[in-house]
Length: 109
Image (cartoon, rainbow, N blue to C red; front, side):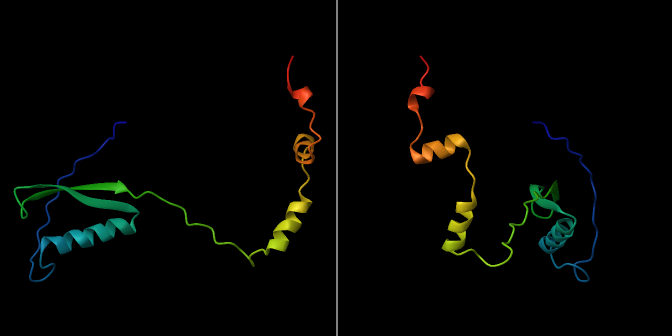
């Protein structure tokens, strides 16, 4: 599977005394911004040392649905058995459960 990527070159200039004290704080804030937009940003490559150029990979964050919380009160064992009694099985299932199943019908001659 080939991924299509776009390489954009931006340069950010800022005064560390007025904004971020180091590059890692800037990267953390930039990653938080992308996270708010539903994206993940990770530095995958550093060129020319820690103060040099960096390659930031931005990907869509995988969406995992929230697990559903059960509504209402949990069922007691008696309530579960009551629901099982309401189950109306089909003929083969019913016959198998009561051992009335005729095996000779199942075997092909």
